[in-house]
Image (cartoon, rainbow, N blue to C red; front, side, top):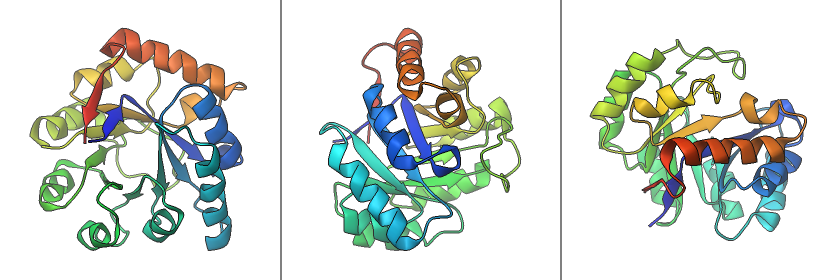
Length: 213
């Protein structure tokens, strides 16, 4: 079985080279990193994921954003799909049994619809306003997140505008994990900021708090 850590880091190319960012995140101690590069060519993105897998710790997971083909061909730990990507029920058929499949939801209806899909976890958000996506869906707020968490049968990863200042409230809604981008990658020392996040999560949730997928 695979555990979902409380901190779900995203190495987003909007903040720099995702290979460099992923390395810093792993150095800081994170063990689950999603690789996101919306503007890369197919080959560039594939090469970036392969490069990251070469130095990723043995006990870590590298998740590919959107591109199931890249996840499959590179041997990455899984893929995260959005609402406009290929249907999860078809993607699940081409992934190995050990690869993780995640799916973004942006309201309670989408979250409920996802219950019939072969997923390991769902993401819910944006919880708060976010600057990392120009086409972000409407903010669901803590109340929307709480409703989704109360009705979901799978772990929920909260995403969107999450910082150490509001993460405690997010976890209180029932989120299994928080996906963090800006509050990690905007730091001049990503590894140090990652360690600060992990210490914070340990204080809030306990040192070994994970959810099994």
